[in-house]
Amino acid sequence: MQKRSMSFTAMVAAMALASCGQAPTSAPAPATTSATAAEPAATANTAQLAYIVSQHSPLLDAAARTAISQDFNGAPLSGPRAQHQVTADNVRCRSTNPPSGVPECSVTYSASGEPVAIAGEDATALFAALAAAGIQDDAGMGHITRELTALQCTVDDTVAQDTPANGDQVAGFSCHFNSAP
Image (cartoon, rainbow, N blue to C red; front, side):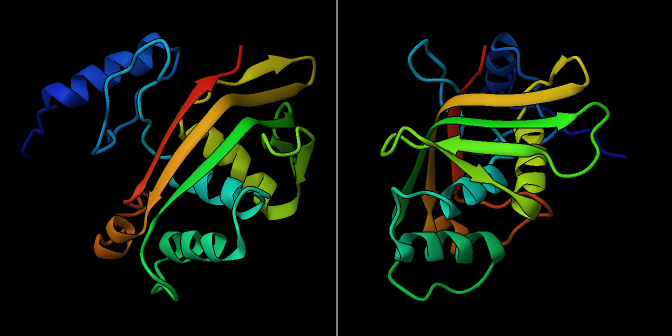
């Protein structure tokens, strides 16, 4: 079996994630930027997180939400290619410990300041997406909370449309965020 070596950029990204309290993932993000105090490192495994948050965002118009959905689901675009910005002040999910049933999730967008409740399959997928993005569980009495702040994602239609998905990895989705305290 051939052993894969980690590139210097991937190694720096893994160390940056580890220093932020986030576990590195087995597949580092292809386009990783350096982390500073003001701008956290891009995190791998964030396509589903960006997708779910975008579909409930009052900050995006219907055309942008449709394009992001088409990118994520591998469908051809129905409009022109663009780059879309998906932002949220806070993303939070809480589930029973051990997890059973549908978690309670909410997203606070800067436009309203009021949390938007996420329910059903989207809540279950968001809870899993937070873990996949490296958000650590905050366990309390009978519950688990996963939370992040300052979410900033870029979805690039050109990259998403021109790059075949590799399992759960969907190209063209890049996110930065802070783990909640």
